[in-house]
Amino acid sequence: MALPWWRRGAIYQIYPRSFADADGDGIGDLRGIAAHLDHLEALGVEAVWLSPFYRSPMKDFGYDVADYTDVDPVFGTLADFDALVAEAHARGIRVIVDVVPNHSSDQHPWFVESRASRGNPKRDWYVWRDGREGGTEPPNGWRSAFPAVERAWSYNEATEQWWLHSFLPEQPDLNWDNPEVEAAIHDVLRFWLDRGVDGFRIDVTQKIAKDPAMRDDVPGEPARSEDWQPTIHERLRRLRAVADAYEGERILVGEVYLLDLERVVAYVNGGDELHLAHNFVFLQLDWDAAAFRASIDRWDELSSEAAWPAWFLSNHDHPRVASRFDEGTGLGEARARAVLLMLYALRGTPFVFQGEELGLPDAEIPDDRIVDVDGRDPERAPIPWAPPSDAGPGAGFTTGEPWLPITAEAERLNVAAQEADPASTLHLTRALARLRAAEPALQDGAQRTYDAGPDVLAWTRGDAFIALVNFAAESRPATLPGGGEVALSSDPKREVGPVGDTITLAPGEGLVLRRSC
Ligand code: GLC
Image 1 (cartoon, protein in one colour):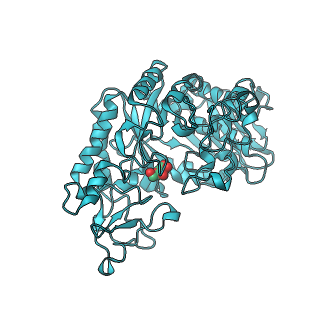
Image 2: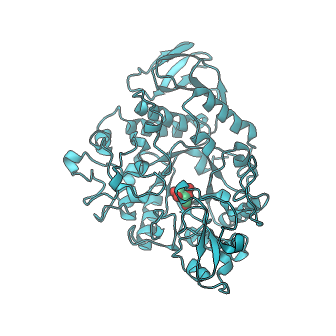
Image 3: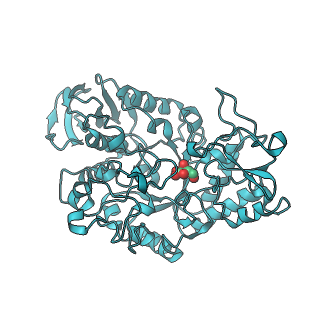
């Protein structure tokens, strides 16, 4: 049976504000994305996932949605969206959109009504509670996911009740215990499915089922504001049924922000909930070969036949790999290249965050340019498409003033310069995509990790391939089960050719070997 499309190759995350600006206002937009489909096609991505582009007051840069079924004017129009989908599909690139079911913006008409009075028909669409201590204290001790926000409740003077917000006060949590809310979100999915989208990335999936009694957390036990059993799984099965009612394979990718693999795997093991779950246990690992091996093995042990992993180490909420794994060694860029190799050579779907294919580091954000409440501006800096010396300070991202500073390394790490350099990270990423596309064993071949020596993560794919990553800051020898030849290295200095039963890996090097049989 042919492998489903979402298992074959990479899914590429676009953060629309920072990808490409077509109208010169300094903020990326849908027409900017459409203008760069050549780049995505050359990367060989199976699909793009677009972070939110819906109408929004942008308190959380689009994750505060004021209208789930319209495009914010800053990003364009529904016609621009339809054109983007049509043009992407014409090139064989599928389109996944972000859906934010846990909360809306406080400017959403649903919340405007809900807040108006206790008797409003939409009152129960959000989570309203009386306070404790005669109303002066929040209903319970739940905290916002943004440390700067502190408590997850705010008080509405007019109706003398508190509303729940797992993020900003301007992002009130919807009440998923109300079947009308669930039905309304199903309709949102259908709206975009009818427009031809190929799936959804579901924001904070674990939060759409909470303890209905809203009890305080107990230290050492799972948080009660999320992952409420078995409700979460029932709700996911109903979301899946919405997608499955459509032709073709429309997929659900969950942001499942639970730092417990057993609970993450439960979202995909049944085969009738999410297709893919982002694994944040993996994202939070230290740069340590043994830790990576243990985590990869643990996923395999826990997962069922139906489950399929999604590998990622970078998104719009976390420092970029090239910065995070540098650790003062100067090897950040080499390690970012090795990470790309790892993502493509592991059994599972690689997720590539825009700019990862360039090896971008985090940008420096001066204090007076900080815009995010949670310190996430550095990884959200715009993509440099061309050297500032040619294209001006907007680096081909914009002709205007970019909404966030562009990385200081734009002169070297832009798309045009890397296009011209066969040793660049951009060419490495394309080569990885081509190799995976040409080799079924790198798509769904069996995977086994093995001990190749200290600081080396090593695994086999089917009988045909071995992959190795050197986590040390120095060279390391790696043992190989039999010889082979180098298929691809993340180190541009590596010579391609035959190898025996050991190989010395350069600092930060990742390697795919074709085994001689
Ligand atoms: C998710 C998003 C993040 C957002 C949060 C609230 O974690 O990835 O960017 O701030 O949800 O919607």
